[in-house]
Image (cartoon, rainbow, N blue to C red; front, side, top):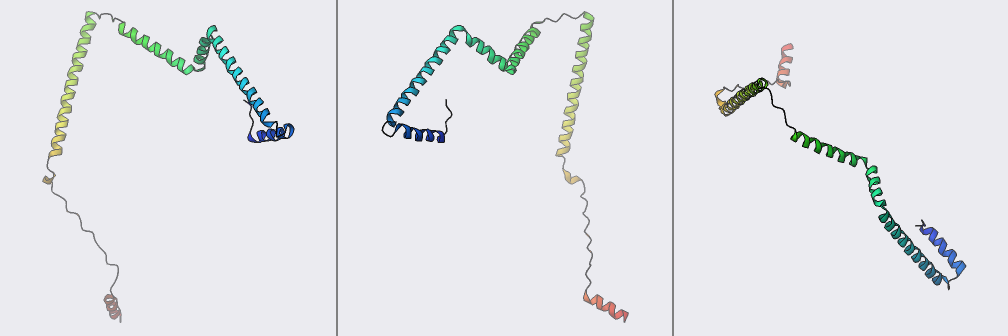
Length: 171
């Protein structure tokens, strides 16, 4: 609506009080209020009629398409989802052609060899784990403990007796 601040409204009120006068001012405010109420009612009725006309003419469908166009990321993600769903559906329904007997024999050998290697690897891992657990449970007292060296202390301060003894020796 109109962008009027408190200062503008106060100025309009003072001017209206001076021009209209204090006796007729309440009647004028009542007339202005009725006019504003009628204007708001007409605006509501107009917007309702425009919305009804838009619904009947299919503008809402166009509005939805404009909203979809204004959010391209959502539209792109929807397309990606559709494409991945189609691709996964196509991949699950594709029949793989049968291998020739020669190629099938090679594939079987490869599978057998990889199964043997996996079994050997699992056995080696189990042995390593058992050895690590056995080493962790061994007592640590079997190794002799090394004695810690004693820290050496130096006497830096000389006593008065030694200084006196040196003085007597020099004399």
